[in-house]
Length: 424
RNA sequence: GUGGGCGUGGCCAAGUCAGGUCUAAGGCGCCAGGUUGUGGCCCUGGAGAACGAGGGUUCAAAUCCCUCCGCUCACCCCA
Image (cartoon, rainbow, N blue to C red; front, side, top):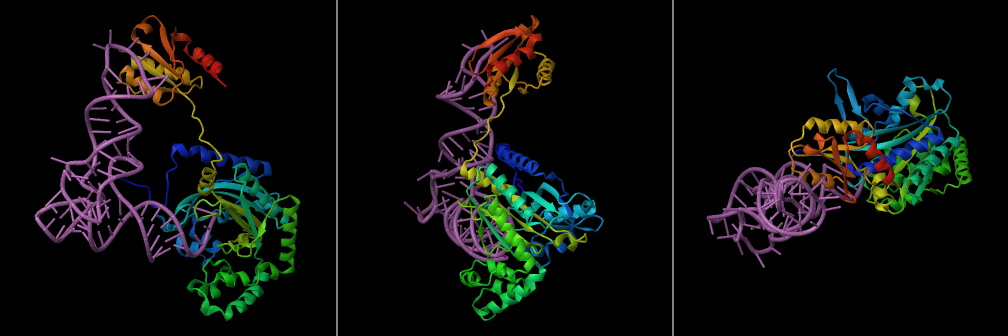
């Protein structure tokens, strides 16, 4: 049997209403906050991600779906959305628009990882980005939007973790302090941490290994070593969050896996975890990214949220029951009726926006009725050989089981009035 | 990349530990019929798997051994 590639999934019809719910609420909350939709390509020049995300990150080192196209160009399926949005911002001269530019998108995201619960090689993200302002008021706005979004999905029981990892100015001295702290503890640390020590000291903070956790907890915190600019930004953000009553928890270990983050970083995690992949929405500020990939120096902040994980959590909370499907009118034929009449009657109903289905031909009346019952038909139109010759047709109400004869020409109008009278 | 669990018709699944009675139970779903042109319940019948693949042990393997593949969960990391 053919199968979908490892780590990919079909979203079947039965799941659609969850997805539509998420997408609808996402769009709606974005509209309220003044964010406009952008549709991105599914792949970009590989160099965009290498330069933007950082060569030393796991994503770039081992998770990108990179291929050469027929022209020999190296392209990469989006491993995240932010870099693409920044590329679009630069390419279309959005710095000439009123700042900040507020955008949101939905995109499939590809990362070559071992799949497990809540983690796939292709997943889908809803992302929001505000480009062109360094004001912490925008950080608060993005977080407020994120929280409102989750609330609308019924995911109230989440915790917002925030942290600030500073900017290049404060990170250099902080890195020194961190290394000094770890220097004499190196030999007790795990392999990974020993290599992180020189390559990405910040990552030492979120190691979960029992050998390193206690060390990480006692390590000097980034927020205690921010430069005055970052420190002020951080304080203001916390004040804004408090002013709009957004509860948060400062977690020093939130450092994020991509190199472009500066200052604010945050994650939302459900309190009752479904699976071990707990983060359902995460983001941060990336003031250096746009210039890093060749644009004008532009501060920005945003977040991404995994739709599969959102849906998992919505289902776990049973926050939404399956939607009832619309019920069709089914057209059947008894005796030897010209199939063209079926098609014509169906077309007549559909032109009046009535959900109509024709039963595949060649079935007995019994089978046709079974079919109608199986797809939960509201009415069944029976086109009978004899009735048609006298210009009438039968309409069966599938709920009451009663059947009435009406003139063939009054069909659409009859159904419309019946549907209206049985509504609500 | 590493480790654990699993792999029987479209789905769920018995049987695998104590090999033969398994040319593989049952349920769901699907298709058809239960008199002549009518559903949902019920009844009957039907299609559909050589038991993930390959190799080995044996008189004999879905059942034992080996290899590979796949799925899944966890680690790393992440949405």
